[in-house]
Length: 260
Image (cartoon, rainbow, N blue to C red):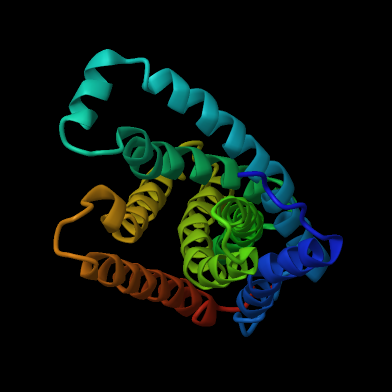
């Protein structure tokens, strides 16, 4: 079935919907510290970097690596024997966490001159993650619009997809990349080149766990009935809320920089 043309007005509504809540979260995170808040211009620059540069890099690399990985016979056979959709499983549990956290880290690196404490890395990491999330929200919304249109359903329901992801996935991207940013800041300040490595791996694990919870319905279709989708989703949201709460706690308890 042909895809209905999207109106410019509805496209604007989708863009605003995709970016509104992530930008609100940026303001929330940036204003969390009691002392030494980061300049808004630098914060918005990192947000834009995450949305425009990191998202494009991740999309390209994921497409390349996914195509290459699925050509590996033993890997594809192993996944096929356990899951009905091996491509999706490998993408959401392996490729996405590793590639997306690395691409978002580039956004943090763009603010290196603004980082004076490890907590600054939390702010810029969360901001890069939120920028990435905003663009991801829009892409998922557009995909949902095309799918609904092809099925003859009301494509405006794609706004629901954007709304759900704006809350759940935005918090995940913010907290995971804040962890990477914290590690990068520690490395810059202590002149230890690989100080970020354990924090990056932690972010990958957090990201993968979130994807696992939200993808339970895809990973195990038909099992436990439709309940698994709801359980997985609410568990993922709770996980993301806890993670961002830890990040905000670190920011609230940061101490002011004392001039010497």
